Image (cartoon, rainbow, N blue to C red; front, top):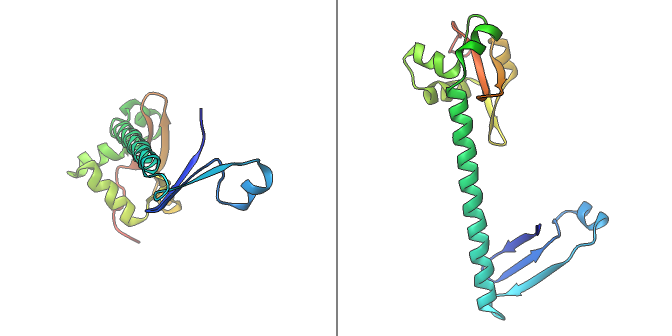
Amino acid sequence: NLHAKCYLNEQFCIVSSLNLHELSHAKSNEIGVLISREDDEELFQTLSDEADRIIRISEEVRMSVEKVRRLSEENAPEAAEEQEGVGKLSTSRLAKKLGLKTQELTNHLLHLGAIEINEGRKQITPLGRRLGGELRVSARFGPYFLWPEALPLTKA
């Protein structure tokens, strides 16, 4: 397994094990190679193509993870709601009860400030907790939110 970074612009490419922060310089032995498009256009293009391929694969994996995460929240089990959150519904079930799509309710909760997205993950905020929201994790379905059936959907 090679762990390297590729810094690329229109003229140069650096392939390196070096992170561009001081801690990396102080604690590790690092090496890098500078490739100039002018000096070796074929190698430069190969590296550029490989960087594009890695980015594309990473985006596909990220989209798959987001899809699984979204589906797990939408499919949160009813039994968990009954056992762990009496009088509470998952985001998807509350949306259905309100006649909304799950994404519409999620967007409203984001706008309201009850949840936030941090590093690509939905998280409950202190306001969300005060409103009675809870983050739950099911071994089968993953993370999801529970909300009171009578959740106030306006800013206080």
